Image (cartoon, rainbow, N blue to C red; front, side, top):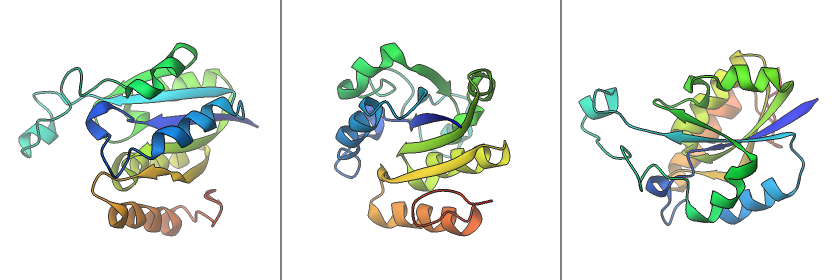
Length: 168
């Protein structure tokens, strides 16, 4: 079984006191060499997006959209996909890339557990991947309560076990 680590939206905009702790752990996960592929997503908000229509105009350009500086050295050996919605699988070519690489299992980490990680887990599951949420490497900018709500939904809807693996 080939595994990919998908680092969801670890961009300058999404790094704050609620998410900063993720960076060191994600660096260790990448350096562990436990993954055949490491993939980063970058969320980019567009002027015509639903987000803007709903009143949020952040994360539209650099430096907000840049992967945080501490993880930039890992971009050389990783695939980076730009997305314009919640799910990593809404990024053009993401699913095709993983299939071409023979990936059958994805491990998700990053921000926000209650939004982009959650949506990516749902889509990955529906596309047939074995999904693991690395709980200690996920967080929400809105705090621990939202992180826990996201995890609760994942546990219920994807039958995620205590070890973070979705059981089908």
